[in-house]
Image (cartoon, rainbow, N blue to C red; front, side, top):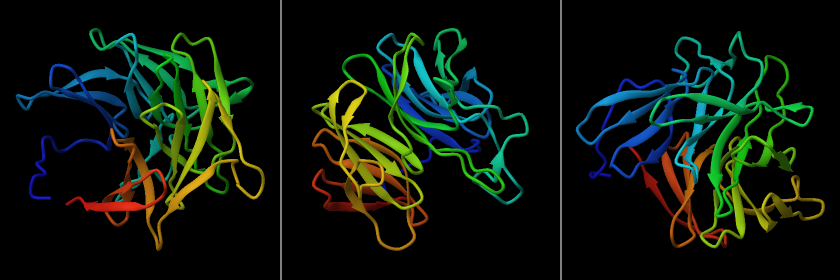
Length: 261
């Protein structure tokens, strides 16, 4: 990976990069509670203060950014990852961010009567709606369940697509928009659903744990994080512990693993 260059450093748990038309990259800083822009001239500036724990980020059809906010976490000394929810944690949320002004509006904190626990990653479809995963929040003695959701950008409708759905992390759509993928973090498993209509998927019977189709799983102790789907339909999944990007074909073959320094 000799072509990898560090563009910015001293960031507080960066996630969710979005490439903008002007060549800049906007991303979240989970532990900082902010959304940040890196510009081609090397400048790093704050776009918005979301509070909580901004995670996955995507550009919507209206040009605004949509953010999965996990509600905030505590980070212990010597721990890069969260050790538990923030002291002021109440729910997770989906937020809309005006890129020009930095204004933040909360669209969803609940799905029906049930709170969003820790929204993680997000992808838009061609219909203008978006799928997002909820990782679930780790508490001292229990873990809240997460899932896969579908929502509209105007804040009028959010629905469960699949609940529960393991430690649902990265999410992405196939190029033809007919398949939704999500990465199960703790088991390094990649799952898929065939989409029937926006926000509705075909579910398999038992023994599939979530009604999902298993695409692949990795051996040993590895964990899956964020993902993107390339133009050929391969699913590129950030792989924790071993420090790779794992490229998976739609039929489950491991195309390659790219080591990141």
